[in-house]
Image (cartoon, rainbow, N blue to C red):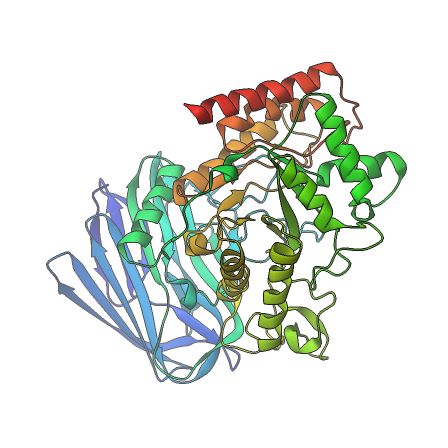
Length: 554
């Protein structure tokens, strides 16, 4: 996509046009707000334009109400536009506005745009993938399915890249930074009529007392589709050297079919008016597997789900549910199967306060992986699960519970994505030390997390009773496309809960093997419509798994 640039120095924006049609009017300055106040530009902004061997370099120096200096450098290169802002002074960052900012006396000034559609790689709606350019979008390590308005926990985090289209021409807006610099919780696309800006949420948890530069923002042009934009995003990250290296080779057993008991627990609960967590028992899991084996369905990997443990943080079996979990795992090993234990990220149940992030009243609200007490807690828990119990790895869930809030207290400088990565690094490094072929499954399809996960789970299905039939399969294809575009090195756990109906479940079962590793969540029937399985359902599972296994052997 070839473009032209026209600099408007007095108002500090650049018109970017394609075929003489304005695509953007990009602001050449930013605002880095602090706990102490809004970052407002005042007076003239000095805009300097220079030619380089690669393209045009524009430097905008502004007087700031909170920083000693603020300089935004924007490079207009043949296939992309790169911008970053550097400030000096002291402050605790809250909101960092990119491609827009506050300038007195006009208030907040976004960039202008002619965007028509926007695509987010973060699933936050049961059916929709594309959205109108006037609708906001958020990529985050925070979300919650049980809270209204923030149903975006499925990929936490997804890649830090929005895709947008104008007349079927695609572009991307990528945040490029090593994970240590990702001390923000969320990345927002914020449209207005005729324009937009971008924002990173630092929540007052990043302290600036020396020159600070925002993560590089890259607007890359010329994509052929939304998924192609994500492929280009990954390429950008590789080019800038911010993707961590994976030093772990796949084990063959990681590709084996999966049975996860959560859906079966929910199905039993739905029929008996019980919560599913108390149903994670040895007796139930024996029955689940016996039922499947009776139909000729034998999974290679079994996931014992929520809540097999007495306390989430300490990860010891609940003796009321499991008489001898180590012996149970040994029997599965003798049968040629592997066992993953469900591990709940962030949950402080059973942890001491010194191992936790705390609120303004000193109450624990989540684990603090920068705390020495938490490091010891997680290390001991992982060593126990993989060593003493001899489990084979983990299904890590609830990464969307990443702590969020400017008043929260914690031990170290990390926050947001960087703090989540540190928690997962502790789990992953300990797991590989104890058992080198241990499998770690997460729902973090972000290249910054390549070194702390082995397989990406597509996560829960979202229900939409108004949707056109077949929406589950379509939405899971979209999710798998995100993973394959940005993390092609990783395997995919296709999940399979919560299915809105038997019909949607059956369609998805038949196609799972084409997306990744088939994962079965139900045994007797579904939970939502309480459909009891018949011979054709077990036939469909066997056929899907047989086709998947045959494809693996090719």
